[in-house]
Image 1: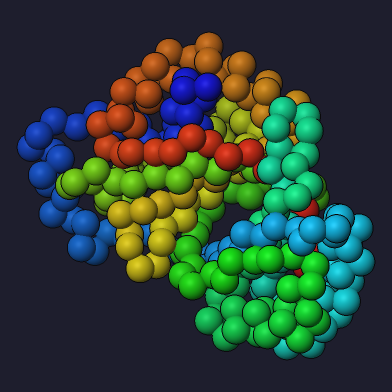
Image 2: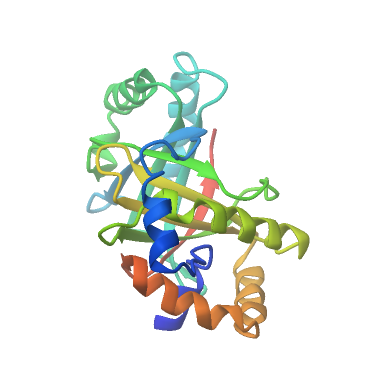
Length: 244
């Protein structure tokens, strides 16, 4: 499992000497990610006696109400943890992708107006992540399998030190037609924290990708290079459903 923890951070291919590293760090004040959206998430637990049927019945009402105050660029997802081929049903996350802060206020207000707290207990999203696709989006259907790794940069490392290598690796994935979409997200208040998200069509395509990736020599380099730059928690695997 430890191997896979590093495998899914494979974009972090840096092999710099001390001089080049100092040069890159001097660029960190103006080399920033070109974010495409914000992501605000809510961690939820079903109340005692409630089942996923209650969530399923709630979603159409919520979407009908929320679309009256939302705009066409917003997206809403429900994420359920996956343990191998089994799906956890008591705990889930709700993810809002948006561009304006007002969208988050409207989202919270709609949940409150429809008494979602009678279905599940959810933590309030106080801060949002800024995110961008690192690869060309190729997986459009729902549901999908997403794998999320939460990381923290070590001292003297940041997005600027990774940007060029990330672009090169994303290009390599594209040329090899790898069946994965990659998303990079940073906490908007503390940019030393970031999330790395892999999106797969299914658990089967994820397993096939892992097997093919293990055979590449570069995967061994990535494990050591990741340790040089970041501290990461173990990966979390979800089945993600798009509802808006």
